[in-house]
Image 1 (cartoon, rainbow, N blue to C red):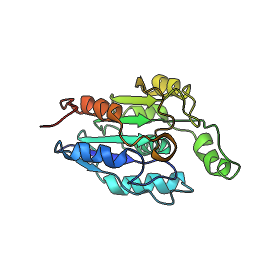
Image 2 (cartoon, one colour):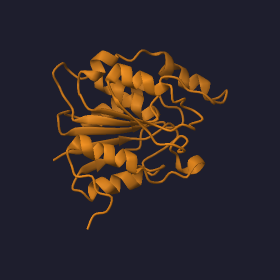
Image 3 (cartoon, one colour):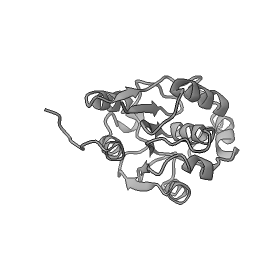
Image 4 (cartoon, helix red, strand yellow):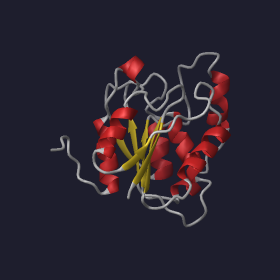
Length: 198
């Protein structure tokens, strides 16, 4: 059975934004979908988040897929670079993934710096799958759309523009459903893309 792990954003949790909706959409299609509450969400640390994700996943294989939101995308990439050579996952969908942020408060900047400055081994991360999709909005106050070019260049990711969605959050942007992410994920999972299930 296919497994999907959904990794929320900095300051979010398993009930934030469009994550409960996406999980329900996947479960209704017979997919084993989980959306864990990541540790220390208001001050996320690379080592904590990657270790937590690794413990959750246990064994990675081609039936494993990821969806990440914002800092969740980085967490997935940093997890992938820890996998042994030859291990392959099914793919990943990244929503508002970034290497550089804007619009942070003075309190947030020290938390973001390690995520911005600790290198990602893109080549190693990308070696574990051929199916990556990166979704961006053209009015995201934190993630300039230029970040998309990094994901395209480093991962050969398919780029999708979901216009007018901000940072894809429920509180600031009123985004509680994200059909774009669902449909792109279903495609890489090889499942039918349907807007309504009978």
